[in-house]
Length: 211
Image 1: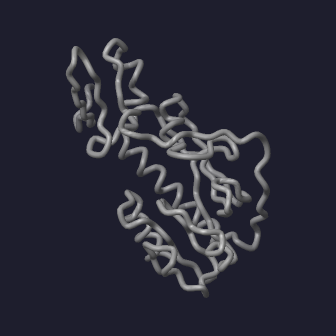
Image 2: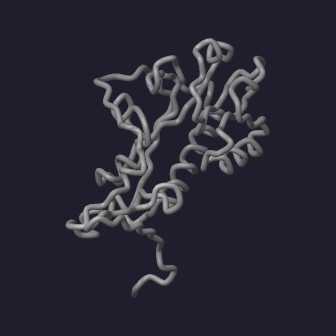
């Protein structure tokens, strides 16, 4: 199978995309307009630009990975929204990209399992490993996979912004821990406002947890 990978150069997933490219001996692109027309299967992983339908039709398959039980949970940052909701088993699917976002036929499913203590970077690592595993499984089992259309009512998550990292100073840490787990210390750190001032909080794990 003539495959390629498309990932935005500024994406957190870029090192994992490079790892996958090396493993399957496929080229890695940063711009959809640069992908050659002789590519049969394009893995579109953490790519931030909209790909026009005319570009998608150039290939046999354009594959995307999404962390929800589609059609439930379409949209932005589904993994972290579900962590905030308190979920510890989060579906992840590989599906066909279409002109309608997150609406294509599903090829493969898996589950990201969390224990409830993982912080942002640990959650990202688990997400990345499952993403790579789905892509490899697709390539290995291509002849056996039968896609199926999405069934049920679609729901949507909104795009996360810095304001979604805001904490309530009245609530306890435990009450807000699932939110705290999802914050990115550098790009959208947790914060709270109190008596006219804004305070930034950053979280990390102690390498020597209490006994």
